[in-house]
Length: 75
Length: 504
Image (cartoon, rainbow over all chains, first blue to last red; front, side, top):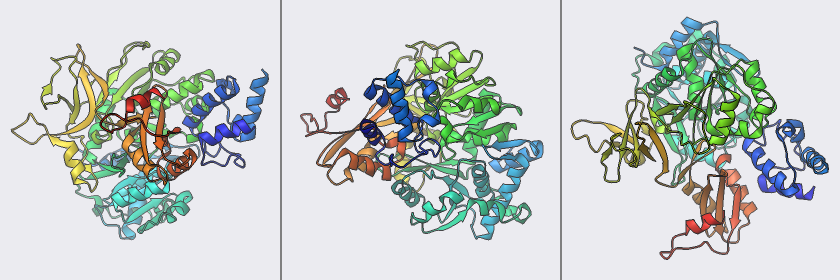
């Protein structure tokens, strides 16, 4: 989780990822953030996030992103 | 002949009154309602003492009320200056300073933000503007008899001195552009546009105004639907969208995120794109998924009202295809000037020169900035007989053997990132405002669409990123901020950009 927080922090230092639960729903992360984030996550955790994983439920909070990353690391 | 956009609005209300002109995810508005709202808003502004001929700022939500507010400003005989509410306060303040407007219309959700800006004019809530007066309260004298050369809007773009430039477009210029793009698109009453561009951005003029000319409808797609691929094309299908006028970045992102893995937009007939050079890889994904759909590339600066050239693709793009920017639209002229100011004609294919644009669609200049206006809008150097203004784009172009134009990059440090125009100098000026940044250099990696800032000094990259988030639009904030002991130098003391590029 710390490594994920570091990735998120580098991407958007202005966002409070500890508390924000509507990153997509509230329009905090835009499409370009998502593209940068996906490539950073793929690289940092040696995973491959596929279009089918790109649904708001997987990206609305840091916990949700972490759950996705863990699931893909197990695959 | 029509003289202002309001003539088109009147005509559209008479022809297509009961049909829908704009829809968002909550509401719809018919042509007759748009006409009514524009008169109500005009009456409201008249009642508040807004005299004709002035700029009125509009900070609108992403919804159908925003274009209605624009039309209301026109009814009052004024012109609108749209601003993006998500802009940081610092950026908004510098826009307010340039425009010096006395009035602003803001959607309810932004009123708090606006009051914190220290805007010293009057602020009207958009909801009140549209509802407090009735259409019958409107006095048509405010906008009667206006010639087509009066300003329609002022749209702001990046300036290399750090001061944003307000490009002023007249009614006439916009009418010429819409006529030109319609001659290529051929929209009818049954067409439906899917809007992607922010409503305050130049690229949205197609979605806002094409319906008034053609009876088509525009559906405003919520911004958050572009961040995830799962629903985007489903929304296009639910709304039976036939036409996309999107930025290249919008097309690229949808393909990159894998929107086609979920659904195909099955009603689409044409896609017209602009903003930057499109990646062939992503355009090909669109072409392969949508056989039979027309794809049209456009080129042009805000100063020439959206786009001045176009090219319709004739086959599938390959990896090494150099898509031309094509030929001039009706109402536009293109002149290529070499370094000595001589004209390069299509008889000299392959010779590179600066692309200059002429014709009635040229902007009226930069708001309140005579110097920069004079430097960019010049007399055609080869015409010694009569007045012929051309706009120097700062872009390089050349003719192909078949007479079509190709874009060959910039003459200066302006770049196109995600469809937005950015002066790298402006990023550097902002970075130098941060205590602890002694020197810096902004560069663009166009292969990966990444903005870099290299700097020397004790400031942390986080401090710089946070400062940027408070002073620059999000698309201008570098995603890579790298601290160096010292910037590499050339013998003359200037920053060695080539060696920095190698470290990107």
